[in-house]
Length: 544
Image 1 (spheres, helix red, strand yellow):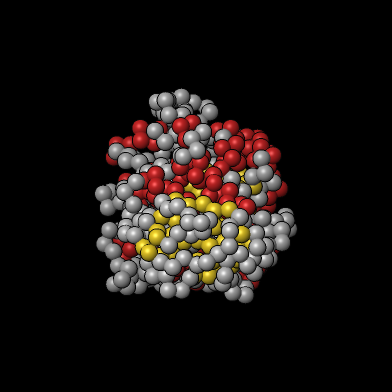
Image 2: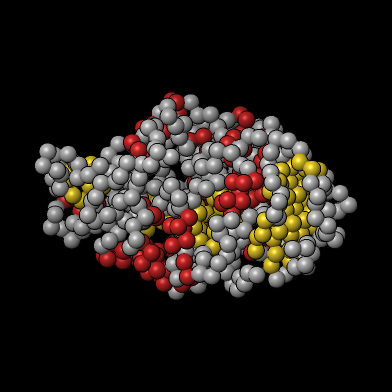
């Protein structure tokens, strides 16, 4: 059984906002903080518990905010600190918590810390970044490769050394082994906590510490080797997942605990992220939660794949709390990625219902509630540096970052009065909020019902999860807490499944997609791409 206490984040629905693409109020074609504030009612009506805002800090925007030049200020394209404070106040009025990104792995090369560090090997911040001498032949210190393209080292003539960057050359890596750097970042967290934020997502945090011995990364194992980019040809053994990171996270947790019920979640991506996720969330003294690309990078959704991913978080003693996302700003939109059912609107509802049943906190990406497909962004409109650097092996992330469509009969979907920074596709405008909002049969309305079912059920929010044995290709599981129970069944295949549905009493609430409940319970015939959820206020409502 789950004891949540005052931990509001357990089972919470967190709505991710990509600020450049949510709502523009300044007329420059880029979303801003005032725009987010003006649309918070939509998020509250959806049934979310919190919003997560991707970076809005001062930045040259080489990686669109993930290259931070000032951790304590708002970039003018997004507004001012006063705009953020007003957004925070409005969110809290609507009972929405506010989570913001913290990018501690690296900064922009425009950050004052880096400017001082590169200026002299004798400066106060000389060791705040990862610097190394060249090999005798002038080549980089080792074979490390950046995620986006090419070597993870760039020569700096001022210091006559190389600096490391796991991402763009404009994103030099901080030296998180340095206690002074750690304290400076912890003070950044205190700055935002004093303003009243409710949590932090730590971006790419397992990239945050390097091997001080600068050992070469080994060649990737055959199962993971890929030639689409050099980074994938290596096992990132010495550029991520350093064993000293948990100690820093413990320091971070002590800071956040001093401000009450603050939610902390790590983004952890690697070949097998689970051991790192569990290490970063262990024993209630590190982060509260972690998530990775288990679903975001999954090419096909099957009962076995869901059982494998969810089954690795069992609720054992000392284990942290998982967090899940089907879509976000770094991955193709879910209805375009999992395509077993021919109708994208049907797929969107099926995935919404499944997401609402998962054990853990869940993240909903802006537009997911509308069933938006991945946009086709032509090459001449591409903004994403990852796409430009690796074209055509990857289409990049812009197709998931196009403007949010608010009004159907508007050239730019009600997002802006001028040409947006990314295109506003006609197929997205057809799914706009004003078109779906009052339609009880729309994807948006179904999403609201699915999240409402989760909000009303303690079992779905915080309960244990146990898979039904012998279900084969049918994904079936029980959820149970001290205050309720639920039964969930999903046919994720493209064929009908007949089975012996469990005998249950009348449900308190239920929701289905692609099938009709029989006598108030789960049907024994599940059509392709169908799902059913029934909930009880009684913990013994469904037999174990």
